[in-house]
Length: 143
Length: 369
Image 1 (cartoon, one colour):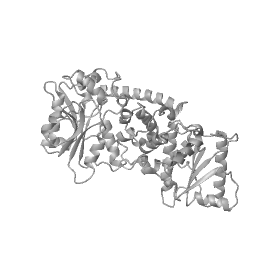
Image 2 (cartoon, each protein chain N blue to C red):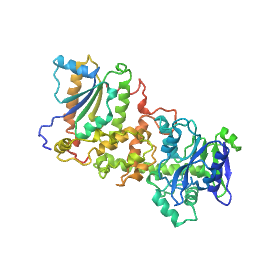
Image 3 (cartoon, rainbow over the protein chains, first blue to last red):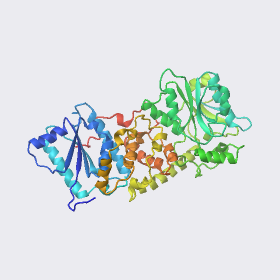
Image 4 (cartoon, rainbow over the protein chains, first blue to last red):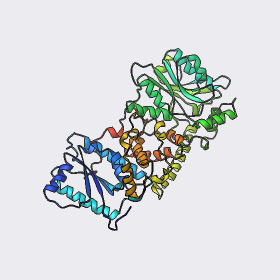
């Protein structure tokens, strides 16, 4: 693949409809600036994020994957985010044991009113990924 | 309750067959799932209802053609159902416990008869070895060797058995304590009091493991830890899991034989992974080339994600791999840490919920902040 000399991290974000996606929307309507490195996929709940698609993004070469949900206790479906928490912990543990960099996957609780926290999270994650460099999976075709 | 079955003419198998027969004849159960010897000499689980046919029962034959938990599940799941007794090795019994949590088995009318396992061969190794000495059953030497030298490795066993530190399933209502038995003279068994009453068995209260069993388990644990260290060095090193599984052809054999992988509508057999030609081309352009079949690592990592918490380490996956990849070892190494994270041990307790279907509000509170 033609890798450009300037590395730009690509973040795939799985955001819950009720909190983090609305928070991201607030960041936009509030005209908050944050890096354009994030591609957002809206789901109804962080508990609806199938870890398989997180893996798929990682193996396809996404540099970072952000999963956003409501703060504990605030889930629109009562307990989806608690289940998401266990799933993400399990997934990261598996990735670590399998020799992957599990720190490319972030789980963050961001409420509908936390537009600034969303913008800050994307900034922070983009910076961390600049430091890490590209996901080696970008260049790995034999997966 | 601890008691023993007397062995005549050094034939422990006949004593066991007699015991199994008594379960049917005394109508403790309606039918018995047990390994049986076919006329060709191979071993297969069978559901036996005629006590006379139990002369072909051979639970001692050291071979594991498949993990019978799947079939114990299928005969126990729906009502009406017969009362079943299933003769299982530890890895089969533990898989069965996991299947109950996935609503794929029921322990309600299912009596587990667990046998202390000395390890098993693959079907082909078993047949070859047994044909070489047709009048002398393989289990005789296998159990005798452990009693004499419990820490001696046996490189002919299935790879999973060589590193199996759980050869006993100690919670069974009936347990055949074969590793502690002098099989020339007796088969020690442990039977729940109520069942013992029904069978008119008497004996003494007893518990604890014999020193030779402890030594056997310690040696296996050591072999396991060494195998884990070796595979982890590969997984965490330059090679990574993509290197370890590089020869995978995605035949799905490992999934098919896995007792835990029960889904009838597995996503990897679905249209989710059928793509348009332009999509394959796009992937090829992104990385310069695309392995075909694609999604090989996605398959293995997703399978780990789906079943590693319940992985009992039976190693059927390793036996089934045409590329001879250490599938089971990778799974066990990954699973060990995962199971520790959730303080979960598959097969330990049927009442314990699967970690990913439950949660506590006040755990891992630092995550996500």
